Image (tube, rainbow over all chains, first blue to last red; front, side, top):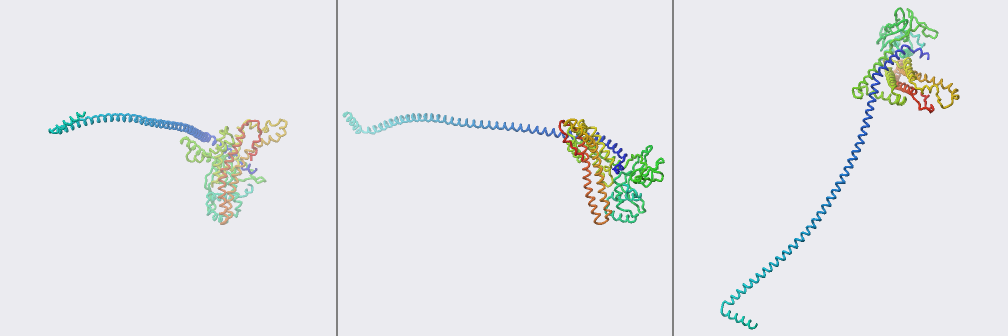
Length: 166
Length: 388
C-alpha cells in the first residue's frame, strides 16, 4: 500500500482525467454518436429489407397458388371441351350413317323400280320385235310357198282342207 | 524500493544501456557485448541491476528515451527526446527535462534547484543533497509536478490515434452508405461486440445507450495503451496506479450519479419490505455498512486489477529477458528467450482481456445502478459476488 501511494503521481492523475475527459467528449461527439447511429440505421435497414422479402415471398406464394388454381380450372375446362367435342363427333358420325342408310335404301328402291320398268319395256319391245320378225318370216315363207303354182295350189288345197275340217 | 537507493548514478546509466539493448531486441550480439562490459565495471551485481532496471521501467519518466548506449570512453549517449517539465512551486515553472541530463545534473530555475531522483522531482540545495529519514525515504520537498511525462505523451498519442481511427470510421459510414471500409472493418465488430455482448446484457435494452460512449472509449483506451505497453519503447501507462485510479474514479462517479432510486434503496434498505422494521434493525447494523463499503470496493477492485495485471505482466516479461543476461549460456539464454516470447504472446492476450474485463465490469456496475426493479421480489438475484 505504501508502495502504491508512493507511486501515485497527482500530476499524472490530473492529466489523465483531463485528457480522458476530453477524449471521451470528442469521441462521443464525432465518433461514437455517428458510428452507433450508422450501425443502428443499417440494422434497421436490414430488418426492413428482411421484412419486405418475407412479404414478397408471401405475395409470391399467393400468386403461385392463384396461378395453380387457374391452371387447374383451365385444364378441367379443356377436358370438358374435348369430351363434348368427342361426343358431338360421335353423334354426327352416327347421324350421318343413319341418314346414308336411309338415303341408300331409297336409292336402291328407286333403282329397282326403274330396273323393273325398264325390264317391262324391254320385254314389251322384244315381244313386238319377235312378232314383227315372225310376221316377216311368215311373209317370206308364204312368199316362198307361193312362188310356183303348184305350191300355191297345194297351199290352197291345204288351207281348204283345214277349212273343211273346221 | 528503498533497497535500491544506494545505487549510484552510474548504475542508472548502465540500466539505460540495458534498456537500449532490449529495446532494439538485437539479441544475438547482446550476450558478447554484455559479458565484456560487465567484467570491467566496478563489479556490480547484475541481478540487482536488472531489478533496478525493471523498477525504473515500470515508472513514469520525464523524458522519452528510445534507447541509450555507452561510448568507449564511458560517456553515455541517449537517443530520445526531452519532455516539458511543469512544476508548481510558488509559481508556475516550465522548463525542458533536458536540463536534468537524465538525472545527472541539477536543474536551476529562478534560483531554485531541482533534482530528478528515481523518476521524481525533489527540491534541493545548490549542491543537490537529498536527505533521508530513518526509513530511507527522501525528506526533500516535492513540488507539485504537472509535467508532460512519458505517460502523458502516450495518453495523448493514444487519444489522437483513437480520434483519427474512429472519426474516420464514422466518416466512412457516411461515405459508403453504412458500410465500413479499411480499418473500420476490423473495429466495427469490436464496437458491435461491446454493444451487443457487454452493454446490452449487463445494462439492459432500455438504458444501455447512454453508457455506450464511455464503455467504448474506456475499452479502446485501455486496450490500445496495453498494446503500446507491448512495444519495446518501455511504456507502462495502464500499469500506473494514477491512471487506473483515474479510470476507476470515473466509473465510480458515473455509477453513482446515474444511480436510480431503486439503486439507492438497495444500498440503504437492502431487504426491502420482506420483514418488519424492528427485525431489520439488527441486520442493518451489519448490512448497510457492507453495502456502502461495496460501493467503494467495486471500483477499487477495477483499479487494482488493471494495475496489478499490467504491472505483473511487465515484470514477468522483463525478468525473463533479464534472465538471458544472467544465464549467459548457450542453453539458458535461448530458453529464457523462448519463454519471454511465449509470455509476450500471452501478454497480447492479457492486454485485450484486461480491457474487456474492465469494460465488462464497468457495464455490470452501471447495470446495477440504472436498473429499476419490478418491485416486490427479493434481492437474491443481486450479484454481490460480482465484486470479485
